[in-house]
Amino acid sequence: MEDAAAVVAELWDDYKTSGSRDARDRLIIHYSPLVKFVAGRVAAGLPHNIEQSDLVSYGMFGLIDAIDKFDLSRGFKFETYAISRIKGAIIDELRSIDWVPRSIRAKARSIERAYSKLENELKRTPEDKEVASELGVTEDELANTMSQISFVGIVALDELLSGGSERGGNTVGDTIADMANDPVAKFESEEMRHVLADAINRMPDRERLVLTLYYYEGLTLAEIGTVLGVTESRVCQIHTKAILQLRGRLQEPVVERGYVS
Image 1: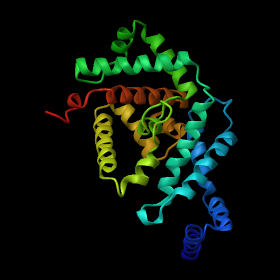
Image 2: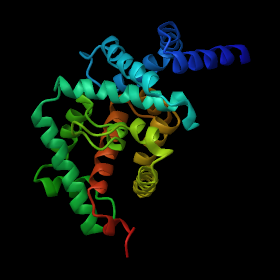
Image 3: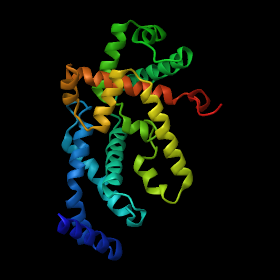
Image 4: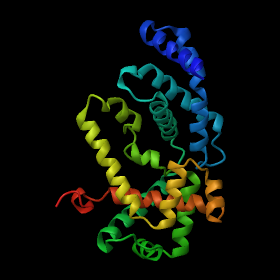
């Protein structure tokens, strides 16, 4: 194990010192399993017509970019930096091919705004019937819309952390890369973590559990379904609902989140 780590360390030193193409290629091969791992996680929430092999191809560009830009002197793990870059590359490519119908995006934005408005008015997480009433639809119609949104997989905490779904936003990796020498970026990253932690802690138990198991424990949607005793599609709907709630909360002004008195 130590020998393998030593070899990788030598490859990094060789590439960053001399720009060796051979060392770079060997680093790409060594870290390529990260791409497959990230692609599998992203694919879990996407339609079946999106091939995982395509996601792997998109992610490879992120890995290569991460290897080229990684600074050994920053003192953090390459895997953490690379995973963020790989996710960012995959998400950017999915956005560029614009595979999500505009009508679905519009519905998602409407639900986000409804959650934000009701949360501010009620000072608690709104119930489904309250959200449906705000939108002028029935609870069944709201549930159907949630299913449509979850099916196309346009909501993910990774996108939320990287600045939303608009093109041109920075990835988490960008923040990590600059944090060591940029106190402003470090402060903003810490504040975002506090805001997210507060928002997640105020969520209903089921939504909070799904987010924790998926993003922090690394369980698949199917495994979470087994834990909760529900179907994978139901877990997907709960995940979608939770992310839309979080997005709605992050639209609140800072003063309303309690950070300014």
